[in-house]
Structures are given as C-alpha cells and as structure tokens.
Image (cartoon, rainbow, N blue to C red; front, side):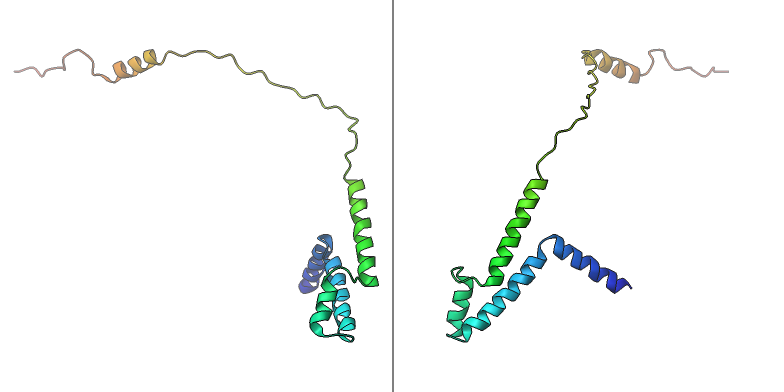
Length: 125
C-alpha cells in the first residue's frame, strides 16, 4: 500500500508542476523525429523537429492548452477587494528616559570595596 501511495503523490506532484505537458511534448517530439526520419536523414529530422518552424498537430494542441491554462491562472491571480477593514492597533513606545551611567558605575565600585573599619582583634590574655 505504501508504494502505491508514494506513486500517487509523485504523480500528483508532477502534474502540479506541469509534468504532464512535458510528457505530452516528449511524445510529440519522438513521433516527429520518427516521421521526419522516414523522408530524410536522422540529423535533418532532429533539426526539423526542434527548429520550431515545423510543429505537428499535437504540438499545436499542447501550445493552445498551455496558453489556455496560463490565461486561467492569470484570471485567478487577480486580487479581490477585501470588504473587511481590519484596524491595526499600534502600541506607543515608552518615552525615552536618559540614564546617568556614571552614578550607577560609582555605586558598583563603591559597593565592591571593603568597609573602612579595621578588622576585629583577638584579645591578648
């Protein structure tokens, strides 16, 4: 069941990115090379296939279908008017309060110093 699921997902992914057009176009090119090679050399057949001046009926139908799909996608991508207006609420910034860092630094330096009183002495008996 897992391989079938993976195959379906891979096929859906290929179709979503336009892989079906590539498959059809490859079939059209292969048939064109086969048809043209019956009347001339293989090199000339490949040249006529890919020069764009000699498209087959399948190539023409593929191009029409691609163009129709692009037009349909362009029509879908037009933005619609949003009828609901959302009011944004902005929080004002707190006012700037300047801080005197020199006072805080002197407090830290003073707080790290030892107290000025002499240490206690043991009584001599």
